[in-house]
Image (cartoon, rainbow, N blue to C red):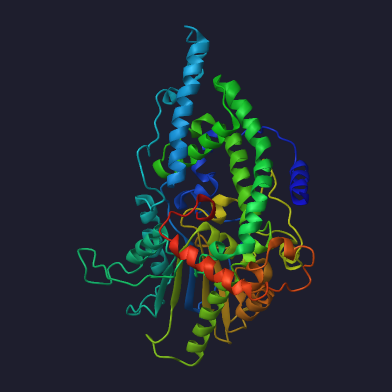
Length: 514
């Protein structure tokens, strides 16, 4: 397959494998867990010499858009089974080591004590994937910080049309919305000692939610992902093989590539969910952690991010929803609508597969000519291999509770300085100002510039044209708009809708629902 060969060539160009020295005493593995990172470990300013704009005092907040991932969650049912199998495998490895030692304890002393008799912390669990207490805290605290930061937005009496809250039908997303709302509206009601209040969270059917679960309904994306997953696995193999050899030599255990993949997953779960960093994570050196996190980031980049245009173009309905809410707020402000009669915030809670494409639609985490290249539909280089620095890090792009906020400001025409436009958009990623390449790498962009340079180039694509065309039909003639099959397409969509509706009660796959 041509793209697989290209990916291997790119991997070769990314540089030789070396083992630089890391400052182990300052290395916190919880900051290097890709998209399994907790928000508290990942919520750091993206500096790179960037200075956030100083917003003039005359400007005031008019509207807020939030797109957030759910908080820290438990492992899914499928992953729980994998950890149970890992326990059996580790028991076998330790048993083999004992047998080979033949009464000598010298080689056994190399084996970390926790491996003897280890059982998964989730052993016996029949369900998984739910929002855990740490995840509730992440969203609750985020709600409080958002309210305190934008007091003038959240000073109105609550009404569901003023503060619109939406979540996907997946329980961890809707639970995240509830936790956020409890923080946002804490002390504003009459329920219980905390003076909480009831509030509305709207969810749309998984079968039709193209705003927050577009990845579930986009057939072209599903075909692309299925076709490229084997190539991505091949990209990861050299790193897994290198780490496997290192750990086998270090601990005198006959680890396989699959063992290392499962131990890396266990490391991420223990460190992020349980704050345990001296067991599975302790098997890996800091450099090995950085390599394994890089393979996760490669997968995220190729299958969810800038690796293919369909990854983010399918999110155009979400971008349209954001723009619609901004322009409705501008109209309400221009027409001096009475307070309490127009929306002040639109708050959404979904998944990594929602936040990552939305970040790409905004052009975040691009350096140099990256923004111009994606607008010309040219491929981007893969994130460089450690120890090279890279801007694409899953721990920053989409940690648990990771979020993008678009804040609309009204700035009077007579503002001082360079701010002569009336409406501006500030983009915050994980609550930090972040440069917009489409706006000259500023975080505070005139709305008309934002719309012209960031939004409008995507508006030539719509969900149906992007998602309802077979991948192989699009590739040979990308310049011609593909047409759907004849009248049978409507019948096929109808049966697909029926089947999707009937499967809604089943747990979603790990591959498409982070």
